[in-house]
Length: 174
Image 1 (spheres, rainbow, N blue to C red):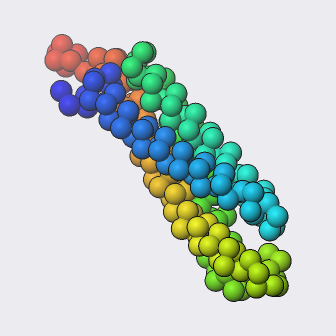
Image 2: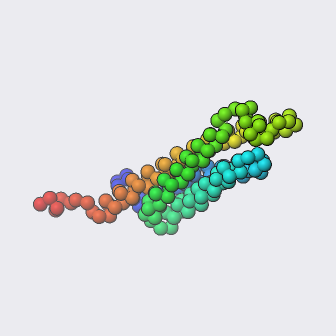
Image 3: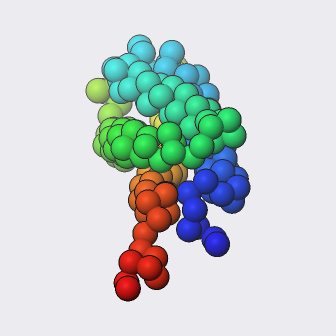
């Protein structure tokens, strides 16, 4: 039994767990980057933070839709969405790369670049920098989760095709 049939309840539950994790990661990304966008809008990287918000929005809609579809229809539409999972995986990877390229360096290296010449708001700047540096790992979690769901979708797509076609029977060997 196990994973031979692509419409079993264990696949629906496994899909729901993975999609719930994707939903949580996307909500965390939207929360962190949405909160930080106002600050970084004035400090040189609004387009990159906006990219983070777009990726998080796409991921939250995808996780909600692909998480609920198997409860009402078959798992097949979710399995057919595996290429979209891989596209989102690449987008999460690009978001991680963008954030780590900016925030991998020490905040002291970029004082002039981000317009911090005075000491009046330096602690606030360092706090925002540390938040963005740590929150880049949310993107890595999103990448991993969408890789898992994409691979799961492909595997179950091909298993579902094979089980629905009947495969070889003993009569075909005669």
